[in-house]
Amino acid sequence: MKAVAALLLLLSYLSNCHGWTCTAPPQQPSAAQIDAGQGQVVMTDSSLNVFFLTGSAWSKLGSVAFKHVSVGPAGIWGVDSSNKIYKFVDGEFIPISGLDLQQVDAGGSGQIVGVTSSNTIHCLQSNAASAYQHLDFVSWRYFDGQLKYFSCGPNGCWGVNSADNIYVTKITPISCDKTGWTQVQGSAKMVEVGTDGSVFVVNAGGSVYQRLGITDDAPQGTDWVQIPFSLPVKHASYDLGRLWVVMEIGLILECQQ
Image (cartoon, rainbow, N blue to C red; front, side, top):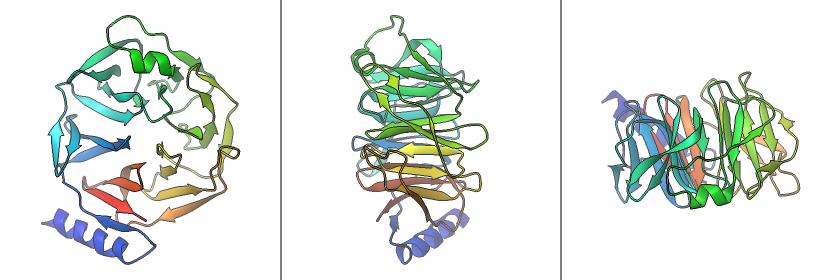
């Protein structure tokens, strides 16, 4: 009952203020992490189960236990509790060799990016990411710098480091060549880039901010604007005009501006 009351409070607060309207999508108990891309939504729960949103219900996806899952132009990818990488192929997750990651992102223009438990940064070229169907060795590109979270979109790739500093760069999907790192003012524990280039961050206090002014010529954008929630947010993702939010208490919201 407390969870339901908290959800109703959140919906009332956001439906009447700040230009955002939130609804309660299908709930999955103890939601932990969510990702949206290409019109699809996937999530994990606190028991490391993976789910796919189908109409008005969450359907369990595959049999591998994941701590992080991502969906985008290169398909559905995830990492398990041992940092092993998987791709969803023909109804099941198959392991990807060559590297271990603690977080993976499939939201770029076909390339896959991610970070290891030691915060090293890596990229898999778009041709290899989209064509991969078997267990042969895959070669990942190493990037300079250190990040704990990394996410890509059409106008650039954004990351946060262990000090919660925020950085942006641009990556060529077919080669994984990148430009230099540009630090962006602000602080965040995670960042997600939508397939339209929109950027959202969640900071250490559970507050959500959107980056404004992003263009192909200015991938770093210009300003942050807060999207106020009355309870702390754990994770957020954006696709097709919808902001998907997982609250610290495990509830899911779907918000539109």
